[in-house]
Image (cartoon, rainbow, N blue to C red; front, side):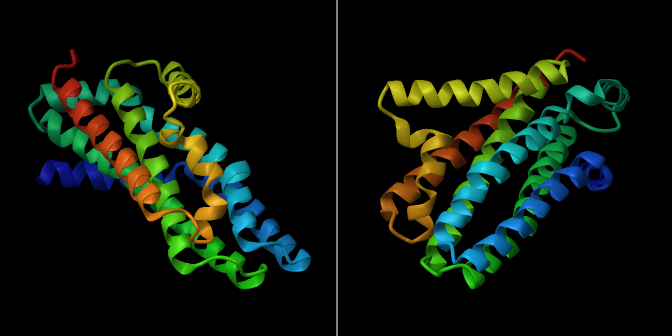
Length: 238
């Protein structure tokens, strides 16, 4: 446990200091301020404003940032991993568990820090057409998408050492999966379907079953990716 906490503190500190995270947050906050000002002056609908920002700004930027952070969990530190594990100072499970918690923590931390104030300002100053429950569920759905992306990225990082290739595979894989799911009639499982449904979700118009189903699927997929990461990393040749 001490090794896990030590790695977690170190990794969280490194992530908090990284320029990638700082630039990511800055690129999210600047457009958010502009969107709030426009929505307030033009009396835009709150639900449409929130959904447009998430689809056009928040999701693309966050997908890139989260992918890079996630696939770098193992791939970018091969030498340190070998030294730590081969010297028996930390187990593989402790090492990767700390990385998973740190990566998911920074992902969800940025999501809360950016989206909660933004949603509050939009709901307050734009034309009100949202419900508190709808906004909460909508933000949870977006968080589940990012958590799934981070989990998949971490899993990829355990099987390859090429960070750029893994980022490309992850992002292209998400796009292709959406096309495949639409082709086989499971559109509701794709990230695109969740994003397209956000205006109705923010208004509280999406059926509860659809919300629970989407959240459940992405949480299960995230958990599966995390357990797969641990299984693969235990068998990884350092």
